[in-house]
Length: 80
Ligand code: SF4
Ligand code: SF4
Image (cartoon, rainbow, N blue to C red; front, side):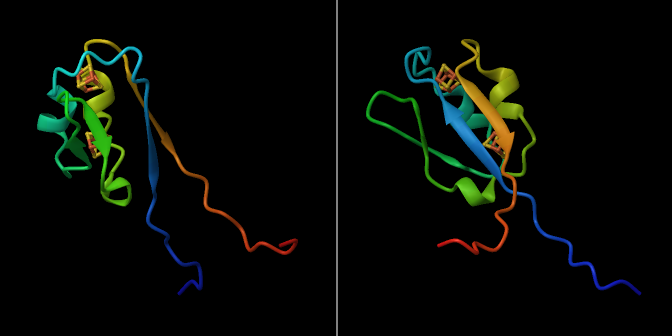
């Protein structure tokens, strides 16, 4: 037995809107429906915590406008 708790990994979705051409591929392909469409069809991060880090959006974006990074779990804030 171990006392270590397994924490769910969380990910950050960075969208480079200057590069995004609003093709909607990322919105359509994300298996967890992390993105909603904005008024031009580009992605809005709507459910960031549902992201499983599969990288489908990053790999399929034709304009390299998405970067997925794993969030590092914040430790207890002692100096707050
Ligand atoms: S990494 Fe996967 S789950 Fe996360 S936003 Fe991209 S497609 Fe969706
Ligand atoms: S796949 Fe890339 S270019 Fe297309 S909407 Fe998503 S971020 Fe924009």
